Image 1 (tube, helix red, strand yellow):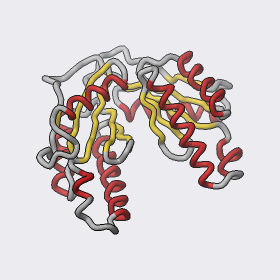
Image 2 (cartoon, one colour):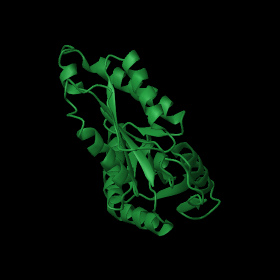
Image 3 (cartoon, rainbow, N blue to C red):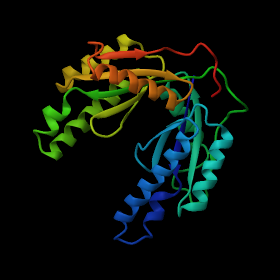
Length: 259
């Protein structure tokens, strides 16, 4: 089982309309600072936040309690001109968990409702056991040499964006969530995927885009622990210690951890 949290800015679109036509630069700063602040608060509890669309962000929240979520909501409401609301969902796959988180929040009102402020929507009656996080850190082989140092910056961005779209589509078909993580890096929240599943995904990506990728996969009680192990596995591939495009470090924990 895995737990996901949807973080959604409250009434954000209508609010921005009152800020004047020269608002866009300030909004970009606000979104960036809000994401950074939320990332600090989630990661301090073992969670990991992805910027997604910036007005809608997704977090892997195993180990982040309901009380922790409430504290984050209060902190944001005190320090920002906008509030956020959150939905929490649990599922066997990451996709299922985020879908449940989304439904929880949607039942609490529209994203553009002026009445909805700092809502925490969930159906968790108490601690849930049996959770863990599996994460993959994926990057493109020799991207700097083949693309960054040869192509113009915009074309490089296009290639990464196209790769991200294909990777997200392949991931969703297996119940996995994949997020662009800067540069030529992607993070997949991938509970339940096997090494064969990853080899299939990387092969299909190469056929579709012409780019070869590699993936380090890790496990943990929470997202920070899992990504740490995934980074170690990817470093092994980068240093040529394995000769394989996919390396799993460890496996699902035998103990039942609290969600």
